[in-house]
Length: 605
Image 1 (tube, rainbow, N blue to C red):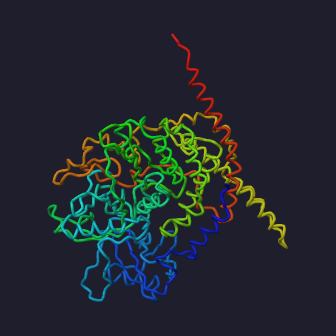
Image 2: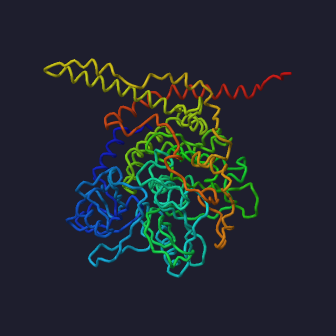
Image 3: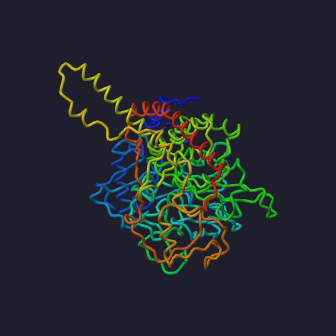
C-alpha cells in the first residue's frame, strides 16, 4: 500500500508540537512532573517540577543542587532547546544540560549533589526507575526482582568486554536477568571505563551520525519497533538506575570494595538477559532458519542498522541436547541504528544464502502492514527525546523496504542496494543514496519553479540570475549506470566475521596488549558469568584513546534533516517514482550474475 507521505509529515509536526500524549502524561501539565536532568559529563539528578517552573528556574535549582554555574548552559530535550517554556516536557523525561562551547570542557568530572545545603534539590527516586519503553508486561516485575537483589546484597557485575560500560544485574538467586548500559559510559563518553573518552554527551560519537549518549534510546527503539516479537529482540527499557558499581572517571577508589564508592545515578538501557549457547560467529550460518534470518534482516533494513555483525546475533539451541538442527537467533546491540543521516550500514547476513531466498507470504504480509506513520508516532510517544532526523531515516527505510519487497526483491538485494562500496580508497554512495541524491536534485528544481512563480507575482522584478546560476551541487546521476557496476557482489570491506563497530577493532587486534577472552567467566575476582556482553567479550588493557584521532571518517552523502516539511513531502514522492527503474536494474544485474555462476569459467592452462 502506498506510504502516506503527507500524513507522515503531519504526524511529525503534531508530536513535535506536543499535541499527542500517552497515558502517563495525559496532557495534565498542571500536575507536578518529575524530570531526570543529565549533565554532559554524565551526572543525573531527578527533580520535581513545580507548577510555575520554567527553564530558567530549573537551571537555577540545578546550580544550587550541583554547585556548578548554569547561566552559560542550554537545557535540551531531543531536538528541542528549552529556552523558557517546559510544557512540551512530559513526566519522567530525561533532559540534557550542556554548557555552551566557550565554557565546555569534556574532562570535567561528574558532579553529584553535595548535600551540604539543606534547601537544595534532592533526588528521591527509586533505585531503578523506568523512563521509556515500558511496553514489556514483565518489565516492572523484572525491575522489582533486581531491586530486591540489590537490597539483599547481590550487586551487579561489570562486563569485561566491549568498548563501553555494561553491567550484569542479577536476581536474589544470583542469576543474571538483565544487562545495563549507562549512556555516559558509551565509547568516547565522559565516564567510559575502557579508556575511550574525549567527547561530551551530545557530540558525534563512534558513528558520526549517532551522538554520544544516545545509543540507549536506540536500543529501546529497536525493541519497540519489533512488533509481535517478529525478529526476537529482547525486551528493553530506558531507566534511571542508581548504584555504586558504575564508573566515574577522575574519581580514585582504593580496592574493589563497592562500599568505598559513592552511589551515582545513570540513565541507561536495561535489556532482559536471554540465556543462549554462543553467538553466530562461533557457529556456521548454514543451519540458521531462513525465517529467522529474514525477520532479523527486515528489522535491520527498517532501522538502518549500521552494526549487524555475527557477534550481536546470539544462538540458542532449542532441543537442549546439543544438536545443531534446531536453533533460535536473538538479535542484540541496536545502539547504532536509526542514525541521523544515511550512513554506511553493515549487514552480516547479506553474505548468507538464506538472504537470497525470496520472502515468504507471511513475511510479505508483515512488510505490507508496516506503517511508518504509526511507527514515527509511537516512537515519539515512547521516546520523546528521539530526533526528527532519526524518524525520517525510519520513514525512508520503511518505504524503501515496502516498495522493494512489493517489487519482488529478496533480502540480499535490498541490503545490497543500501550498502556502500569501497573503491579508490574511499566510500562510494550506495544505490539508495544515489536515488536519494537524484530526488534531492528534483527538490531543487521544484524550489526553483516555486521561486520563479513567486517572482512573477512580485510588483517589481529583481535580477536573480546570479542565484539561479549557483544551482545545485548535486550533479545528475544515472542510476542505471551505477547499478550496472559490480555492486551486486556484496563485497565486504573486511574478512567475514571480523567487522565490529568500526576500524577501532582492527587497531585492537594489532595491539599486543589487547587480550581477548571469549569466556567472561574467566574474569579474575568475579563469580561465574553468563556468556554475554551484547557482542564480543574481551579485556583491553593500557588503552586510553583520543576520540578525535579514532573517530571514523565516514562520509555523509545524504542529509534528510536539512529539508523543510514541504521539501520532505516532495522528496518522498519523487523517491518512489525513481525506485522502480533502479529495482529493474538491480534485478537484471542479479539474474546476470547468477547466470555467470551457473555457466562457470573455462579451464585455462
